[in-house]
Structure formats: structure tokens, C-alpha cells
Image (cartoon, rainbow, N blue to C red; front, side, top):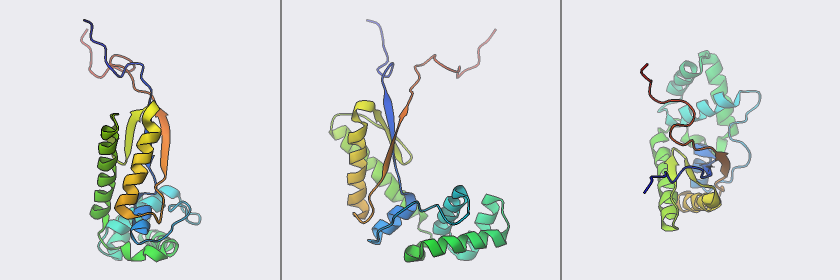
Length: 185
């Protein structure tokens, strides 16, 4: 009998839970949140996302300003302006800033993925967890996304829907593409 890997030729898709910390915080507080949490004025989206996450993980505003300045490579004055814009945009959930809530929110992310993974397995298809997403066979990806939404609502409520983005991915067979190990000649 010849061994044939099960992944060869199979199509997989990637389902990623959206909204991140802003969505979880808003939903946990039973507040509706619309739009992209990281689009604020003329600030670069990646810096806003970094600032938001730092502000939630920091214990004080002062430490958030310092960490944002260091991590983003900007002045403390620029970091303070950016944090001010983030606080203004997210005023209804501003108590989360400087609350050191990051670990609790990461736990929600973990529970979301573990719950969706268990539900996928219970429904008879396997999925691979990767941070805040699942990789599943293409024919089951919509079901995996539904499981993610159900688990999110169970964990934090229905005030904000969990948005799941689905993308196709290519899973290379061993030996295809780059060599992982150097060859001897």
C-alpha cells in the first residue's frame, strides 16, 4: 500500500474572526459598535491598532504613551495625540484603557477559537487553529465561520456581531515549493 498524504490536492480556506479587542470590549459592555475601530482621522490604521491594543494592555495612560512612542517609533507628543484620538473615538469603552485587560481579552480570543474548534470536530470536520482563526477544508469553511460566530455570541453577547473574513489558501505538499532543509552536495 502506498502512503498518500490526505492534504495533497485538498482546498482549504482561512476563517478569521474580526472586530478584535474593540468588538469584544463593546460586546461585553452590551454596546453596539459600527465601522472599523482602527480608522481614526488621518492616523495610519496600523498605528491606531497598535495604540488601541497598548492602551488596553497598559496599567496607566502614561505607560501607554511611552510604550506607543517606543513601539511605533514616534515622539511621546505624537503618541499622546494618537491616544487622545483613540480615547475620543472609543469614549463609550474608555474605561478599558489603562485597565490591563489584555490578558482577559486574549482569553476570550482563545475561548472563541477553542469553542469553534470543538464544535467543528463535533460536526465531523477537522480544523486547525491559528491565533484568532481557523483553517478548514473549503467545503466546511462556512460552517466553521458559523461556529465562530455562535461561540463569540455565547462568550460576549450579541451587541456586536462577530465578523468572520474567509480567504482561500494554498496548502503545499511536502517537497513542493522551497526546500526546508539544506541539501548536501
